[in-house]
Structure formats: C-alpha cells, structure tokens
Image (cartoon, rainbow, N blue to C red):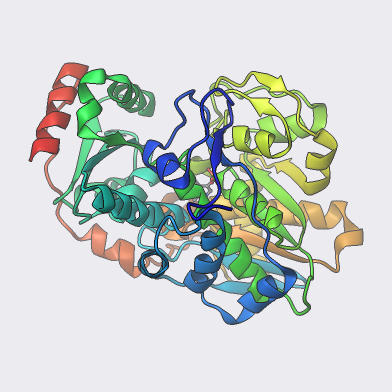
Length: 458
Ligand SMILES: *Cc1c(COP(=O)(O)O)cnc(C)c1O
C-alpha cells in the first residue's frame, strides 16, 4: 500500500485507476461505473477482537486508515470521524441469539447519517486542501435529501442544492431540508422524483457548469459506503464472547450500500458466517441468487419500506465486481461472477408488504411493546425466516439492523398498533422550526442552470 492508500478501479473497467481523493471528489467514474477498491486490506483477528474496548470512531480510525493510508493526515482523520460519528449505536439483545442494532440515532434518524456525515467532512477537508469550493447537487425521493442537507450544513466550502418532488414527501422529510438555510437550498419541484433526477443529470453533463465544481453525495460515492463498514465491526464487537466467533447479519437492502458495507468488512477479516440480504417486494436480488439471471424490477414496486423501493440497485455493480464479475449501469452482465461463492456468503429473502406489517404487529406483541419500523421489520422478518430455514445455525448470534426511527413513519405505525411513536429530540426540533420559502419555481433547465451559477457566486 502506498501512503495514498489503496487505489480504485471503475466497475466498468474502462477508465484509469484513481486514488481515494479522486474517487471521492468525482463520486462516479468517468465511464459511468462505480469506484471500487483494487484490493481489500486485512485486519488481524487480534485487532478485530480488540475493537471490543473501542468506541465507534476509534474503530473507524483503524479501519479507514487501512483503506486510505495517509491521504488524510492521521490527526485530521481522527477529528473528521469524531465529528461525524457523534451519536450512539445501541445493540440490544432481543431474545435467544437474536440481536438488534439501532442505526437511527443520528440527526436525521436514519442510517444514511453514517455515510453522509462522514463524506461531508472528508469533502470539506479535500476542498480546503485545494483551496476550492463545490456545489453538491442531489435529487431525493425523501430520506437522502435530509441526511445530505443536514450533513453538509454550515460547511464553509460547500453549497448544497437539493431537489425534491413537492407533493410526494412527508412534512417531516421536507422540513429536514427547508428549515436549515445558510449554505443549504431546497427546491420543491412540481413533478416526481424522476423529474428531479433528470434536472440533476443534465446539470452534471453540462460543460457550462464544469467551473462550479458540481459534485454528488448520493450513495454511489465510495465516501458514503466506507463508513457503513463501521457499524458491522462495532455491533459485532458488542455481541461476541470469543475471539474469531462468527455471527450472521440481517441487512435491510435497497440500493445495496448497506450490504456492501458489510461485505467489505467481512473481506477485511470480520468473522461473518453469512449475510441475509433483506429486500421488500423489489425482489431482483433473491431472483438473481436463485436463477443466476439479473432482471431489474421496472417500475420499482411501492412498499411501506419506501427507502428500499429500488428495482435496479446501483451498488449491485460493486457486489458483482467483488465476486469477479462485471455488470454495467444499465444492468447488462458482461462477466458472470462466482455465483457459488455469492450463494455461500449471502442468503436473500423478499418480504411482502403484508408480512412487513404483520412483523411490526407481532414484534410489538412479542417483545414487550417494542416498536420496529418498516425497514427494520423487513430485516426482522428475514431473521425469523432464516431461523426456520437454517436450524443448524441456531447457535450463531444474529444481528438485525433497525435503519430508521419509527417516528418517521407515524401513519403506518398508528394504523398497525394504534400507538403514536415517540419523536426523537432531533426530529422534534425540526418539526417546530419555520421553513425558508421555496426560492424559485423552476420548471425548465435553463432557469435551473442560471440559479446554480448564481448560488455558486454568492
Ligand atoms: C437507504 C435505506 C435503506 C437501504 O439501504 P441501501 O444502502 O440503499 O441498501 C434501508 N433503510 C433505510 C431507513 C434507508 O434509508
């Protein structure tokens, strides 16, 4: 490994390798592939066992140093991780060998906070180093916009512009973006998520906008993926008793960034018996495992675990790459991966909306009135299926991830168990704040473009 850390290749393999800094600043590779590690560094069994005594950001410092070398000086990296990962990650024993890890304690109450907050600080560091400014442009269908807006809020060198479909997101989701002001501009579009995404894509391809340093903070950026390895190491360390003990993870999956974090962790040496990729009715992945053929679900199915309504997950390209195959951004498989090895490492179940709802109700009844939200419930339903299908693995500890706070889905929870979930402090504050007015109603690209330039020059 050089001092600049491990190099990255594009999953499309049609553009030169780059270092970590370039991978972060670009977000996506020039050939439209995703940046992926050329090799995965290994931690020793001793090292991983010693994580038992460390905090999340201390674990992060060791894991991330192994990936990026000295491209960010050690004291700076420490500061970045301390600032980004400043919330708790409770791991709770639910029953038998079953555990739940709560990834919903960050400021926007979803697991997106891990990636967004770390990426924001890393980008700010690199821009400072180069004495440059940037505009982060993001389209959101709900959760990502809030996490990105909050994460980049008050960064000196970065302006954030978020586009959201005005009539398709919840009040709370909107307020996470519109109550901030300062360097954050949230623009409600009359249309759908796809209309927001279209404007963003045209802007990225526009040569006239090259000078404003447009960048993206969506989940294709490796900088969002890398911190998602950390809660695997952390939750593992909280539950194991013996060095080298293997555990099983149930991973609510949509765009497969969550699962990729786990796969990178296990390739770094984390003892994982198996991953369960928990998906809703968007079942392209379990079908792929079964048949070896990849077919996107188009249009994607609408389920109550709405952050997982993805019919063509972008991180699938990284997963295929990790197992020696190659698939492009349109879903065409150019090289078949090692299917047997994927099947050995990962089991996947598709959970219907009906079963998701049943799981929320039964979890509440069975576990002392604990409330689980729709994404975590998909994971929990898979945990229960796995326990039935693999009784020989009953002695292994199994950790499910709760990826959001139930208070983000009040209507669903009330209709199922007739309880109003308690709103966490961070969301309560937002609820009572006033919103900045929608700056301009932008309905064609040239208005939008002028607006971006204006923001950059402010
Ligand atoms: C994004 C998200 C997921 C799925 O994570 P991916 O990385 O897209 O697989 C699960 N739960 C919640 C609450 C999310 O916001």
